[in-house]
Length: 124
Image (tube, rainbow, N blue to C red; front, side):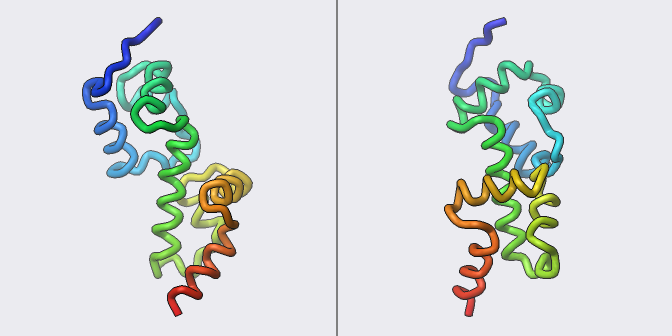
């Protein structure tokens, strides 16, 4: 089936942002296009075309960007100081240690341990 893609597409962007930012569905490590399709009532094929159109990234990158933002927020939150890096990553929705480390380094250019050392040095 071929779906017509429009710039607004019935508030797709707003609804998806609500599901991710407000409801934090990205924390579910098993969240896939099928799950999102059920949540939004939109065929998964259409979602897979709308995400790149509206967010200029693939579905996995879209999810992992939200997860990475969650990790960075938790790194700055004193309530998570005693948590390990990998515990924070998994609690933020990354499905595995290797996925987290690979994505973190790809997006920020350094491993998370080095990032935390730099952040602590900046604060002192």
